[in-house]
Length: 438
Image 1 (cartoon, rainbow, N blue to C red):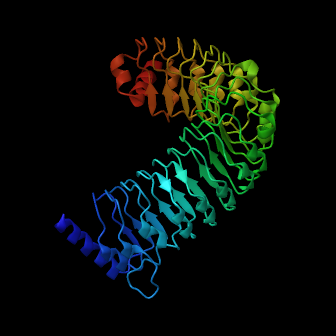
Image 2 (cartoon, rainbow, N blue to C red; image 1 turned 135 degrees about the horizontal axis):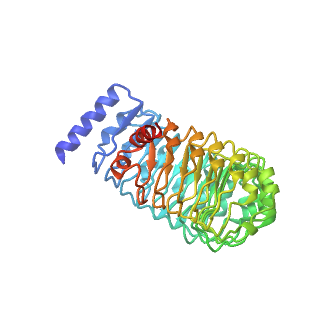
Image 3 (cartoon, helix red, strand yellow; image 1 turned 45 degrees about the vertical axis):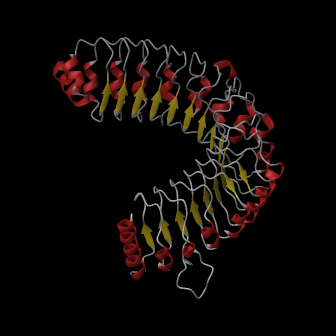
């Protein structure tokens, strides 16, 4: 260990002499940092991630303005993936620190000393064991991003709501968190909120006050069940809404209130049916929607409203009970990816060939008996997946799909092309079909 520390100290001295601004000591199995680190006065970015550190030498502190043993220029400190149980005392002197990453450690509490990190803008704490957070976190007035995903937080201090510049608050996988502070409506700079896999059982009432909110994720909250119409209707700036596995059986009409801005809507693994989908205005008013995930629900058809989504680029309706794709699919002129795995499709419409921008079509685990020759007109196709269907033949026209790189056909009963050709991939299949076409 002595030789390792000596070599590490020499490396740090060399970096200090060169006045390097960046020093990467990650993934070295380091157990302790030599005190000489304090001489690297020019350091702006110090990466100590993926080691075995439990403490940091006091020489790292920037308390003595006349001392050479200070890191007064340090702005970014990465201590992720170590074995810290507390935030080292030596860090609290780094008042100019802007980004502190202590994710993937063993932290249990955020103590009062955190108040000294007044320059902090980004505080990354995911995958620890944090139970409590000091009210002093409210003093971090420059904080823009607070990542507390995958901890054991049960409640947030009211003082957190004093962070008027906070833009991103992520609390995913804090399973005992049941609410946000009463004063959360004061966090008016919030743009990104993640409350997935918590104990929250209703849409937070503060959302109607957050006029800059762009991303809302509340996945894996099956206790949610019902969406509040007023709250959803007020989200006029929302771009991403993810409510997967929330036991939803209905969608409120007010969902279209975000229609002018919403680009990404994920409703996978709920209890939605065609009749529980919003009115046709959903399709006409969702003028910005590019991604729609309705997989793992109870749809027996693609809702008519979907075909009104002129900007839609990706549609996932896998794991439903859909038996027919209507010709209206051709109306989705911007569609790039269509996912219909695990349904009850027995045939495909010729209209798929009119989807001129389609690059990926996945329909594995259905009962499709034949492919339409018109599919060859979808000339941008790069990926086709028909694994585990009932295909016995392929139309020779498919040799014209010049961009096709992935053609997945296993678990069918295809005789021609023969299995040997299919196993060689898309190029071999196209070559065989072209020869067959004469």
